[in-house]
Each structure stands twice: as C-alpha cells, then as structure tokens.
Image (cartoon, rainbow, N blue to C red):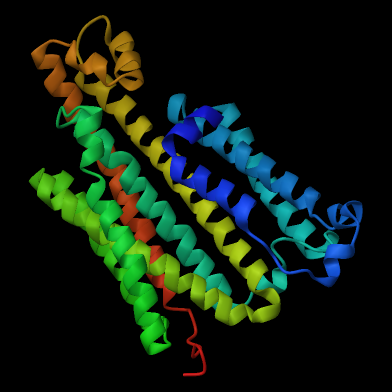
Length: 342
C-alpha cells in the first residue's frame, strides 16, 4: 500500500517532504511545552474510534460488493459502523478535552453546509473519475493507458477551476454564489457523463462531463474552504480546516465504496441472467476479477459481458449525479461573509 502510494502520488510525497524540511514556524508560548504534555492533548480516542468506524464501513461495503447486501457479515459490519460513528460523535461532544471535530464548530451553519457540500462533491467527483476508466476498458475495449489519458480533461478542469475561484474571491471578496454555481457545474458534469454512457456512448460527451465536474469541484473546494475559514474566525481556522478535510476524505471513501457495491451487485445479477452455459459461475468470477479476461471470451459472450458492464456502471454514474445534487443543495445553505474588509 505504501509503495503504491509513493509511485502513484510522487508530487504529494515530495510536497510533504518539502514542508517537513523547509517550513519554519515562528516560536509560540506552546513551543516551550513538553512533548509529553502536547501529546496528551491529542484526541487519540476520537481518532481511533473514527478509524474503526470507517474500517467497519469499508468491510461491510466490500463484502456487499462481493457477496450480498443481505450477508450477515455485511449487516453486522454496517451496524457496527453506525454504532462507532455514534460513539465518535459522543466522544467529540462529551469526552475529548480538545476534540479534532468540536461540535460547536461543526454545528455552525456555514461550516456544516460547506463540509456537507465537500462530502457529497468529493463523493460524486471521485465516483465518476473512478468508474470512467473502468467504462472505457470494460465497455469500449480501451487499454488502461488509453483510459487514463482520457482523464486529463478532469485534471485540467480541476486546476483551472481552483485557480479561477481563488482569483474571483480575491477580486470580489465574495464566495456564496461562486460556490453555488460551482456545485451546479458538478451536477451538469455528472449528468453529462451519465447521459453519454446511457444514451450516446460518446467519448466527447464524457470528456466534457468530467471537465465540468472537475471545474466545479475545483472552484467549490476552494470557495467552501474560504467560507469555513471566514465562519470559524482566526481562533478556530485550523479546526475548521481539519473538519473540511475530514468530510472530504469520508466523502471520497464512501462515494467510491458505495459505487462499487452498486456496480458489483448489478454486474453479478446481469451476468447471471444473460449468460448461458454450464460454466457461468466461473465466467462471472473471472470477469469481475480481470478486464483482460474479457478479451479471451468468444465474441458472442464478450458482447454480452460488455453490455452487462455498461448497465452496471450506469448505477455508479447515477449515484454520482445524486451526490452532486446533494452537494449543490448543501451549498445553498452557506451564509455570505465579506472577505478582507471589502
């Protein structure tokens, strides 16, 4: 896992190393506090319970993808996850002396709305980005490299959106309508991808869709973070930022995991219903494990498998549209606060 992260995200690794080496923070009163005293202030209990809650959720969703949503393991894992998330909320509210998700911060209207928008937007955007390459490989017969290149428009949209959002907020001192419009772009982008897969089977339509999705998410992640910082005030800016990142991470994990559950369950059902012969179970298993296996199948079977994949992937893209709509709705509850004394 670590090695995979290093090879896939070298820029992130280098940035972390650069910050660790070159960042020089000014001295503060807390700098004289002993390491042990500062360590005791860390909310290890809350963090541990949150990690266990997310782990239980992922186990449940993974088993739901590979076995069945009605499996006892799935039901138990999801119930445990719900209980642990409840325990996490209780710890942050009543036990932790310095919680990393303080209820008084999270409950503030703008912070909560922005965090929810982040949760749904990242869930939507990452679900779309995760399953577009799978669509290209499983349905359009493209290689992994060819599928990966077709994600470049999303990167361009995200970078340009983030930059433009920052410039517009610097010029106008406002973020409300910018955020709402940004997440509307996300809805448009996810919908274009769904329609392109569902009806047109258009590579161009998918590319335009992921540009819109990346552009909207790029602006939204910047403007919503500014909204959180403005609402939190100087004293709680760091905590507000941490809450924002927490919701983004949870949204990403939840979106991709639930999308996988929807796709795999639909794919398993479609393959079992459409394929004929004595070796159906073996074909279903191998098709779900490897894209390369599809190319080894007879032409007639290969056509059926690709059609099943297309129908299954539509579930993930529909889910992505739903999350994008929820992000848009959440963003409308953000309250405007003038920036920089404008």
